[in-house]
Length: 175
Image 1 (cartoon, rainbow, N blue to C red):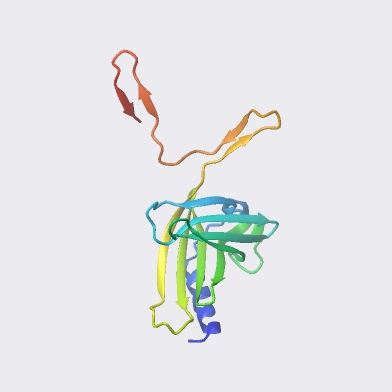
Image 2 (cartoon, one colour):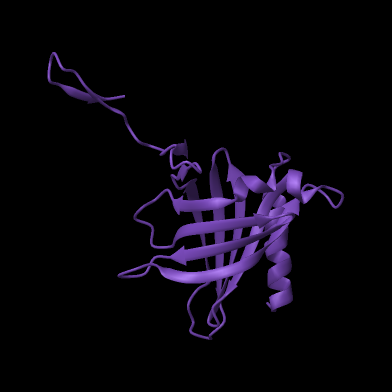
């Protein structure tokens, strides 16, 4: 299968998987971390949005520190040819070419998270099998300071339980 046929097949997969709901392109923007902290695949994404364009910076699991895949321009997909990608974005596609493999990421909003489908095709005649992976990414917690240095906003930390301490009983419990 040549590269053009692979790209066409990948685009068809994306179009088939698109739901009818739309999202603002800004919903993709930010720093994201894999919900599975033990993943052997993609660990972090940083998505930047400017107007109707987006770029994706990815990191993959390596030891002792994650491998920086770099930043690529992303293709923005909307419901149809006349849709406004800024207000009706449904998915992003980012393609990473390492020289020995090509990895295509399809990124879709899933509630407050991102669903990422990854397809890796080897180009180096190594005999390795091409493979597909699925990931869920959560937005990284952020703290913003106002111009006066006061706390301006805090993004919620997902999965965090609030520690309750009772002075009378000395017992601790979570919500």
